Amino acid sequence: MFFNPLYFVFALPALLLGMYAQYRVSSAYNKFSQERNRANITGLEAAHRLLTVAGLGDVGVGETPGQLSDHYDPRSKKLFLSQGVARNASVAALGIVAHEVGHAVQDQQEYVPMKIRSAIVPAVRIGSWLGPILFLIGLLLNVARLPEVGLILFSATLVFALVTLPVEFNASSRAVALLQQAGLTSATEERGVQSVLSAAALTYVAAAVQALSTILYYVFLLGGRRRR
Image 1 (cartoon, rainbow, N blue to C red):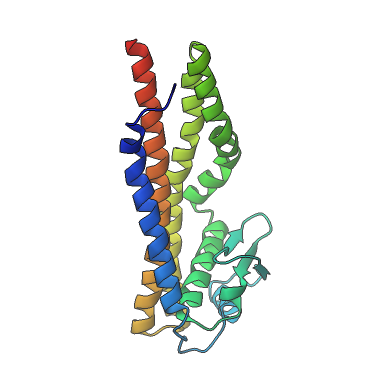
Image 2 (cartoon, rainbow, N blue to C red):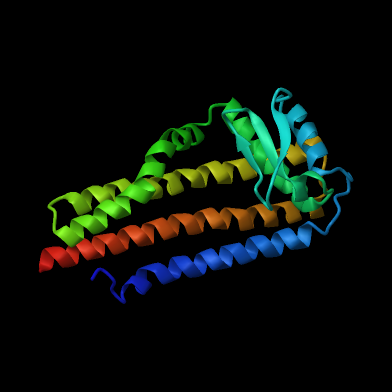
C-alpha cells in the first residue's frame, strides 16, 4: 500500500553514493595498508606517540574486534584500534590512528559539534526505529498527526548525520596536523593518509544523503495522502 516505484527516485542516488563510498574506503585502505610507513611503527605505537604529542597521555589504548572498527570512546577516554591497524606499520594505520586521536583532542577541548552529537545519541536511537513504525502505522490506520510525529522522530537521524560531518572532517584535519607535528609522515605518505581519510569521510556524506532521501520519501507519501 505504501510502496511506490518513485521510492527508487529517492533511494537510488543515496544507495549508489553509499556503494561508491564503500568502494573508495576498501580501495584506499587495501592500497595503503600494504605500504609500510617510513617511521616503521605500528598503529598501536603511533597512537601512544600521537597522544603524547597532543598532551593526552592519560587516554588509554586497546584493541577491538573487527576490521576498520577503530573508534574513540569519550566515556572511557580510550582509543580502540582494530587488529589490522594496531599491529601493522602501514601508512593507512597512521591515518586511521591519527584520526581517532583527533577525536580524543576534540573531546579534551570540548569541541561543540562533538558535544552536540553525543547529546542527541539517545534521541537518534529511539527515532531511527520508532519513527518509521509510527509513520507507517499512522498512514495505515489514518491516524491524524501520527505520521508527522514519526517523521519528526526519524528526522533526528538526519540531524545526527549532519552534525557528524564537521566532527569527522575536523578530526581528519587534526590527524594530518598531528602527524606533521610528530614528524611521522613524509609528503608522499601524507597524501596516502589524506586519501584514506577522504574516502572515509565520503561514507559520512553518504549517510547524510541516505537519511535525507528517506525523509523526502516520507514527505512525498504524506503529500499523497493529503491530496486524496
